[in-house]
Image (cartoon, rainbow, N blue to C red; front, side, top):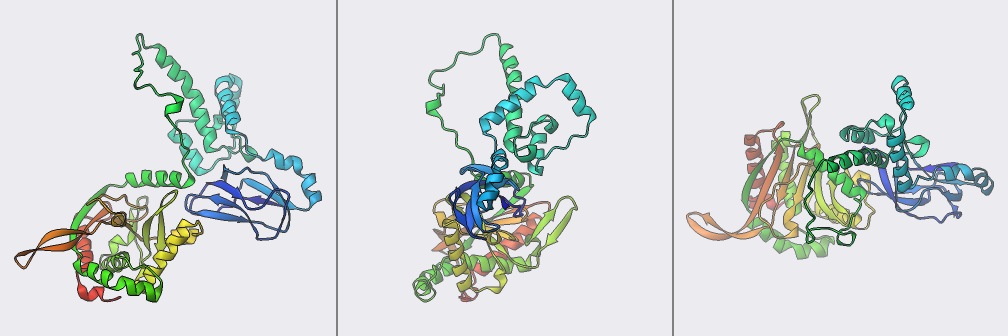
Length: 424
């Protein structure tokens, strides 16, 4: 008999959300057969069976699971019957029960227990993410009772403990107010008027990534590009392109090629910044991340080796990755390894200019906006041209404003060059 666990798939992922079981409890399964789908920070992954046999499910659907947490057993009928009690003991404790335990732990912990904890080296099982969360919330993780497998301390354990110790303080503060203001009936919220929605794994990942991005000292360079030639060639070729190559031709493949050429000329933008070592890490390969809208939030698909690919290949690959993203078949490999990121805000329509958030560990991000008809001075005359607004958000620790201007000018020169655009 073998255990089925949520194994470490890398990328710093510490937890996932068990969306659904693909095999029924007690059914026969084959080795490598997908048993469950788990949503992680990056993608939905299938959990394969480690062997052939009968499956006994230990984790519930629509529940958060940690790395190495037990999900199920697969073995013979006799083996499963012999370990039934063990399997049941590994089922995660309900959140309400866990919260009750944490409240009791905070309120009733004796002086003797505190002395023992102070004089003994207590081994706490918790992920780095949970330990950092405890530090950020000023919670002594040694005092938190873990409700996970092998007494593992989870994120919910820390939050429940923090809530239990904050309630007395909040009550004490309330009693100090001699004349609290009367509640405003129009502003009072009832249970029926609000809805609390738990964040999905993707939304949690976005939140953490944006918090990291916000720490970066950023600056922004903005410019307007005459995209008339680009607009004309896409308009002229898109029908033939769809018929001949079965792919939709958009502005994005051309923008990617222009950005790659500009990155070759300005290598400090195809890089990451190592704050600890205070070093620039220049990448000599060109993997372009594309911010893409998904049903559960923003994700970044990554096109590898863009300097070696044609407009046709890029268009086909973009379409293929978008399709995978929409049907939840995209892999982790297809969403990692970016050296520079582009967000195509213009594909959504509307807006003029925006300041995009840097996608760590990249040094910069290029935002391309909606192409608009605008009056432009051409050879002393005013003409209506197709204008593409762009913005480059960059890490000012790694590059300066002058560098950003040169990088932006290079992108602009390529997009405005009709000869370059004929690489189709």
